[in-house]
Image (cartoon, rainbow, N blue to C red; front, side):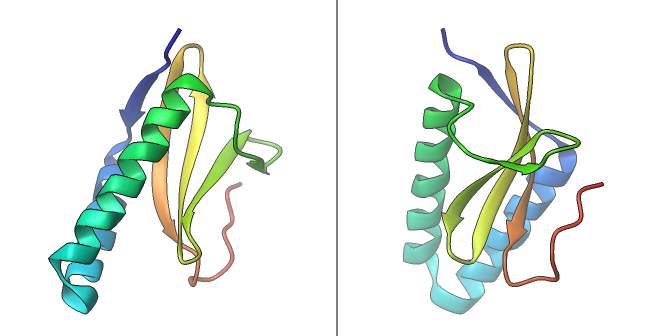
Length: 97
């Protein structure tokens, strides 16, 4: 059984922000590769949502590293994978609590 994938408004915002940043720095070809990587990760999450490690024990938020500079944070609720945000790993340390 596949899990439903949903995005928070923050996830949509941070995704668009990263896409805009990539387009400015490296062009549309790199954006396309990034979007394909995200799509493949989402497809994997729909089938095996517990694959990636828990990043924050208290909240059970998990972290999928898409690239050394970018991660996707998500939670699992019933039969839904909720994408919380996309995180630039070069930012200050992530504080989820």
